[in-house]
Length: 112
Length: 113
Image 1 (cartoon, helix red, strand yellow):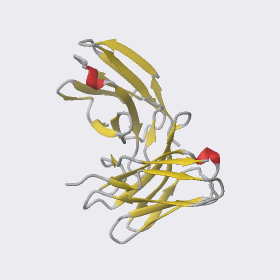
Image 2: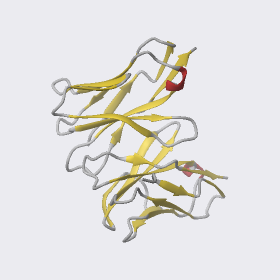
Image 3: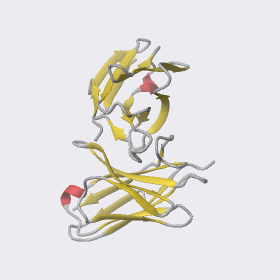
């Protein structure tokens, strides 16, 4: 099955700086890669996603890049704010899988 | 549109008991997946249902079971609870599964004493 690895497990940045979280996947058939943000006491919230026919997608301060050849994708958050502090999860799935495979999460702390 | 709802939000049980958790998906969504989230293991896939049929199952013992009703609402059941079953149980729904956007509920926090 698919194996998704996520790094780093913890990340601290100063407010206003950028944060980058990286994930790798093993199954070349995977074609959909969402990112989730989970705040304390809440369920994961879908914040951005990318499909394998696209190399980059941007939504205001967040962006995701995908390198299909290397089988890795990254989340970029610019101009970080304290409310960006949360745990972020990457995931991967493919058309016939009926299942998402999640990374182990990155705890992001934005220091005011 | 209302989001995914899960009931109850918190549960405390003792070892050996059984528990049933409920999930109502987003209106129009026919796929419901269940996950177990623990600090040590992250998000672990339990099973996925579509149109009342279980399409996929994760690597959990048979004590974990689920079902889906004709209105797409889903329940999961854990029998003979063990201390290690303490976790946040998350339900997620999507239109049809198979690579579509998946939206999570707030989860049910289960504590087994």
